[in-house]
Length: 330
Picture 1 (cartoon, helix red, strand yellow):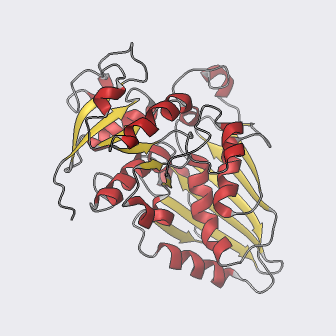
Picture 2 (cartoon, rainbow, N blue to C red; picture 1 turned 90 degrees about the vertical axis):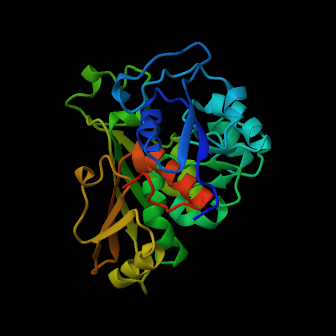
Picture 3 (cartoon, one colour; picture 1 turned 180 degrees about the vertical axis):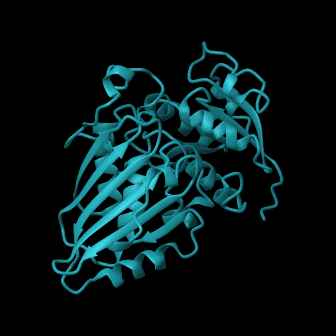
């Protein structure tokens, strides 16, 4: 284990869905000491009933200067606010684990399109998809934790792309629970609008498509849907295998990629379900191949608030500081 025993931690955005997940897990992390739990604004201070007897101190107003006095900061803030705060914290030596989208895209033009408040020139940033980027995390000062949809899609597809198993034309049919839209209420997330309905949104206009394509190095068709459940992501991925590839090659590529990954569970032909992963940091990947035509169908499930947000951020924290990867996540 690392020579560090206790890491002083600040959490900004502790009152949001992802922030609450961070608090629940970090408060019992044996190597983390929460110094500051802050809201998303400088005017908000309140207690969190959901954390009673877990964390009874009030949530403080947002104060970047006080965050700079900690070893590590988790930012569960709106994109524009994270874009402003994160580089300054990293420059002062604090290790930043950013859950916003502000630093995920490496291409300047794409970043300005989807995250216009982000800096045009980025400081050194590590993309925090833990299973795929472990070696980059140990020295990084600023870690951009992936979006929830890209986490599921890239974990499933990247090993197959790297093994040259897929033809062009991948389709990702993704469905998310309502918490994926954040805590601020909107007409789209109103109970009366969501209950008893399923709706596609952001067709050809969702920023996570750019993130998925960046990591895969290939175009995809990505269609997200809002489903009337609290949490969870289910992605059905359709792809065609190259003529020389088959189901055994798919299994071999995924097994090779994740044999040492404690939070990726390969289920093969037993396709996973959202209820198998909620409240956990697992990503479950199942698949079937129609050998007559080489059609591949993958089913991928994560909890959007854990593996898709807070859990993955803590997993990155563990790797970055040399702790066991599963600490506070099992």
